[in-house]
Length: 138
Image 1 (cartoon, one colour):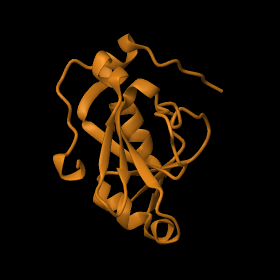
Image 2 (cartoon, helix red, strand yellow; image 1 turned 135 degrees about the horizontal axis):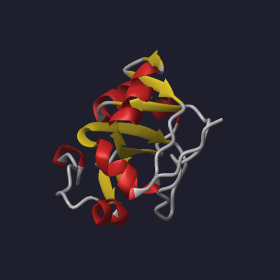
Image 3 (cartoon, one colour; image 1 turned 180 degrees about the horizontal axis):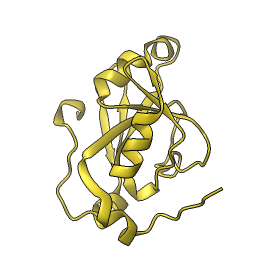
């Protein structure tokens, strides 16, 4: 079994703004927890857009109004692992761990409008501007 640690140096060589994915979160959060996607050997759903996530998670949305997602920036290697995963409706299912500072933001979906909660650690580790899609911000 191979264990990897996420370090800034390791990420820099493979970091690419084209590898954004959206991971659904079904837990009700009262504080920002950026480490929820950092679990090893646990399959997660990855979507390439918030619209695809909403479509893919429609059954859950109909049962519960508490849905949000992480917008994560993966390395090329991580993105390749996701794309090799099991294809699901509008996305992928893969066991890829995401470091907390790879999470750009959490988008909270609700009936009154969507709210974006930005992760300060992401912007400390990545000097570029935010890529938060303004269509999903209130």
